[in-house]
Image (cartoon, rainbow, N blue to C red):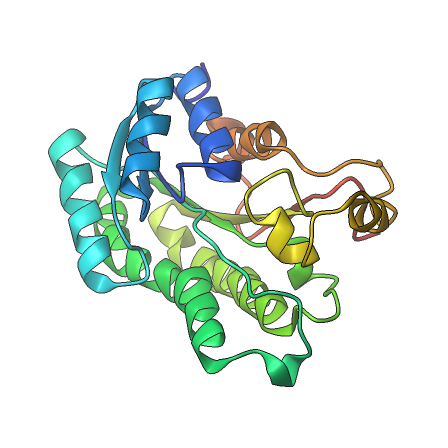
Length: 246
């Protein structure tokens, strides 16, 4: 029960890594709310886990404000913010990615973290307590061809995490990131372009441990970084990648 008595918000929590993190946080004793732009999926996952849910588009200021209002109605304060929501563009030559796809990737992967920080950080600073966990990717550290702008967005997450960490450390607010390799999530097909045994084999060949990341893997790592066991860890981009970046 490493998170007993804590409150946590997990964006993109209806499926994939976000759902795995929400499940682990619940198991560790936290009161959890998941936010997702897919409202019915958020409610379904929340019902299965026994946690709270809110429908929110975290790439828009109005969506983040609605999410914050739900958090404030449910919890006395927010202890843990997990910026997990993310998207990618389909594999393509960098010059062939549409402007609409570029804007969508940067809005959800980068701007959403800015909007959430703008809304939740002041209260954390005032309390001199809080943990923020951002979802980066091995793509930030070892970019894959034909995913140029997704790679770049996750590189932004790593730099933003480090910048946030050094600025918020005097307020006892820790900020870290997770860098998963491709996982068994709804985004897997988008990363690969097509989900075939041959394409999976090509991806797996780049992961020394020989399997994809799972939601449980990310939940375990997130629970550690957001617990008091990691009280001296801030500004870290932790690779949860089975050796992919070695």
